[in-house]
Each structure stands twice: as structure tokens, then as C-alpha cells.
Length: 594
Image 1 (cartoon, one colour):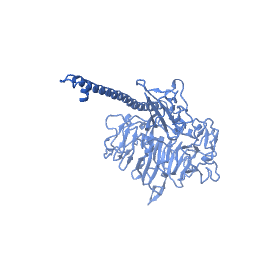
Image 2 (cartoon, helix red, strand yellow):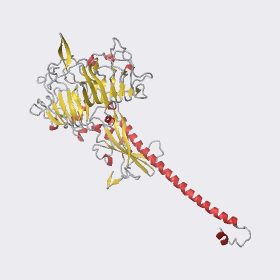
Image 3 (cartoon, rainbow, N blue to C red):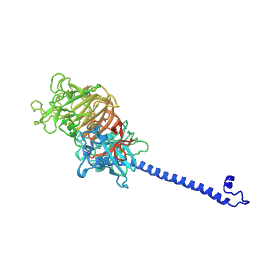
Image 4 (cartoon, rainbow, N blue to C red):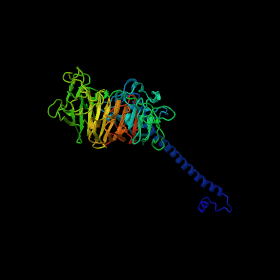
């Protein structure tokens, strides 16, 4: 201040004149600096706020891309064929094509000159594009998609796995909670859901409704299109039903119609929740195409194996399976010409020579990797696998060529036929090392423990158009002066590691009312059936111990059956490094587009 006074010659004055000017200059300068600083900070803040907003919006745009593709899949089940084969993420999907005409999709653009789709309802600044990896779709039912969102100068990418929602989303699934009319004689008038007006119970239980009762543990999600009967059973996960009533959505009665209590549900859940009906396919015939050549799918993957007539399959822990199938002639067939077929060594050599499919020891071959085995009925004339009625009479329960029925086995019913000589029945057991589905055109019998060598990597699907049976052969035995029906099996307990579905009938224990206490039936996987099957009756059969294979939430056995109505859901999703720059050019690493 003294120096300032001297510089302004104020010391020569004997009063304070001029000090106001000096002070004004000083504070004016300070204020100017403060305003300038505040303006700089405010402008920088606006820019950062705008940048942050664009950064967040770009991620939302990427999510919008995932949702758009998911919606297109749900509206068109054939949309899995579409994608841009030039997109870096789609390099392993060799069969992708771009939709054309009115169906063209700008989200399939790639590169600097490629198109982007505009996020609907936005201000026009938000856009997305996506790339499809469908290379595992036929194996697991899952599609991977990489969606990239762009807003302003911000670009972000996410990768999501999308899978068709279906029966294996549940540990337990039924269409009807009644016994199979074909197997039990339940009146056809009962084939409607309880909430649709199923006939009233007369004489105890006319329609054969089955209850979950004491000792039953269902450790996984469960759904029925029908109304469940639930007594002293324990459910550890959410239960859903298609019963639309606003009141109690389950029936607290036992199989005889007697009121009961003791139901155990997850914490906070008092009854099943409502969800829409999930339609069952009427057959598993569509799976047969996975064993045919000259199909669209066979252009990118090796067909599976098809066997004809009764077929016994033993899975071995070394990744092989031993197959006995005496009536098989060709194990892969032409999709357009039923008179053409091949018999590759990978499926076993037909005939009765040593090591062949028709020999007593069968053929031992590798488990088809991520593929399907289909067992068809013996066809009539006009098919490469046809067999004349002279060579193969159509008999029932008299010996099917692979050891069924066993000597002394009693057939408690001749209709339907348990072991038909021309039936596409599969008999399965063993230790599975691999990922495979076994599909039977007729019945599928689980003849022993069927387990995984490694629960982390192995996966088995079991499907049948007719019933999937837990094998329980019975015989007549002397009981004092009378005759008793007893089980022919010398063991107790049974474990099945698999996703199981009976498309038109049921999953149940064969001869469930006979043979005494069989111990516990352990299921690790999933069960889907059109009609509810009986596992235990009175003191005979198995107690249930069912647990869900959580891998089925995001994967599926190869070529597994799906519902007739199709919806898709995202199973996993996470952000990854941006795949494209703002210009649309791909981001490169080591000179290669990521």
C-alpha cells in the first residue's frame, strides 16, 4: 500500500485524497479474476455434465439394442439366422445372412460406413448396432449378442446371452396335474385344467389328481399350467401356476381329496404366483432332423445318430457309449429322400458281426459331441430303415431284441404295449461324459443310475413322445400260500442326472404300485411332462428328492425341446470394451478388429 501511495504520488498530499481510487482498482481486479475463474469452472462443468450424460446414455442405448434383438427373436423364431457375417463378433457364425427388403435391419451395420439404428422415442442422438454369435445355438439354445450404443462422442458396448425360455427353466413342470389317461384309464373328460372346470371328484378321485405330500422336497423353481394339490411337501423356490383365480391358487388336499396342511414354501411366499400358460409340443419328432443330412443345420454342424427300433444305450465314464440296436440299417438319413442314408463309423456299424450294433455286446462309439441321438419306430416300406413284417413281426412283450422283458417279468397291462418289437424305445443308463440328448419316438426307460462323470461340464437331455419311465420290472413271487408281485431289481434308490421331458405323456415309475419301498428317487436337472406321473403309491415306489441344475438357466442339452409358444430372455449381460469408435470404425487391437 505504501509503494502504491508513492507510485501515485499520494504521500505528497497531507490528506487521504486518492485512496478510494486505489482501493477500487484493487478490488475491481480481484472481482474480474473471480468472475473469470467462475466462468471457466462453470463452462468446464457444463462440458463434463454433458459428457457424463452422453456416457450414461450410451450404455442405455446399448441395452436398447439387446432389447430390440430379443423382441425380434420372440416375434420370429427364425430370426436366429440373421446377422451380419462381416461383423467381427459374428466371425464364428458361418450361416448368418442379412435380412432384406422390408425386413432389413439397420442395427446390423458394421464399420465406418455401416448403419446404426436410432433408439425409438429419443432425441435422435442415441443409436445402437449389434452383432450376433449364433455358433452355439443348436448346441445350447443360447445366442450371444454384442450391442454397441452411441450418444454424442460416447460409445459403450455390452455382451448378452439370450436363450429361449422353456421347460428347463423349471425343476418341475406339468401341463395337467392328473394321471395320463392312456396309461391309467382316466376319462378323457378329465383332460382340462382344474380352473377350466374339470369334472368334480367322485368316488375319491375320478381324474387321478396327484398331490405333493409328506417327504417330497422340490429344491428348484416349479410350474404347472394346472392347479397343484399340495400337502406336507417342501418347496424351496418360487412356484407358479396358470390358475387365474384371485383366491388360493393351489388345492390343500391329498390325492384322495382330504383336506391337509403342513405345506412349506419359501420365506415370504404363501402360494403359487400366476403366470401365463406354457404350451407343450405334441411330439418330439422335430428332434429327428438333427440326425439328418441335407438340412440347413447340417451345413454347419455334424448330424447326430439315429437308431431304429428298440435300442439299449449304456453310457461309459470314458466318454463313450455302448449301443445295441439290432434293427438299425442306416444311422443318418437324407432329409428329402427316405430311401437314402449313411452308416458312419461314429454311430456304430449296423449288422450282427463282432462289435456291430446288432451283436450281443453292441457297438461302443464316442458320445456324439454336443449332439443328439434319436431312436425311431421301425418304419414301413418306403424307408431306408424299413423292415418287412416277415422279418420283424409286430409283437408286444415277447422279446424286443435288446433284452426286454426280462425272463419271468410280469406285464401287468397289455395295453399300451410296454416292449414293442417295432417300437422306437430307448433304454438308457450309465455314467455320462459329454453333452448329448437321447430322444425316443415311443418310450424312454431309465434302466439304472444315470449320472454325470462331471457335474460341471456334462449335460444330458432325455425326451420321449410317450412316457419316460423309471424302470421297475416286477415278477410273481410266492408269499406263503399266495402270490405276491415283487420288484426284480436287487437295489434301492435311483439317481437320474438329466433334463427330462415327456412331450405327450408322463414321467413316472414303471409299476409304481408294486415292488415295495424302492428308496429315494434323486433327480438332478429338470422334469417336464404333459400329465403328472406317479412315483410312489402307498408303501411302494420312491420318495422324491428333486434338485435343479442351475446351469439350465443359461444353457440346455443339445437340440432339446422347446415350448410351442416362444419367448426369449437375457440370461447374462455385462459391459465390455467398446467395439466401435464414434465414427463407426471397429476398435482394433494388434491390427485386428475386436
